[in-house]
Image (cartoon, rainbow, N blue to C red; front, side):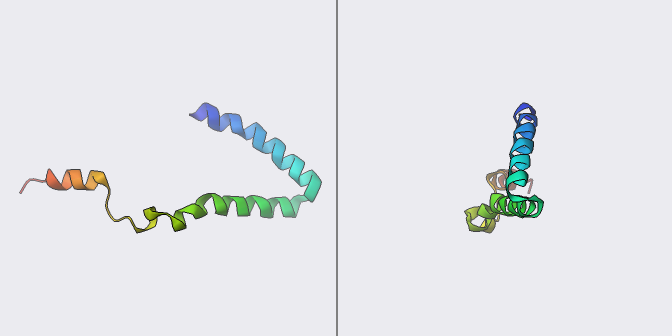
Length: 66
């Protein structure tokens, strides 16, 4: 898994450099910030936001000594 993560760094650097050359530094940083927010923004509209327990909680709850 780390191979994929580390392999994406040069690609991101290249895309960031090309974007900064085309748009300028400030718009590129703004675009990167918005992309970061959008990358985690899907959590706001997912059922994960209202989740209170997990399957693991139910498993351990029934295994508790009385």
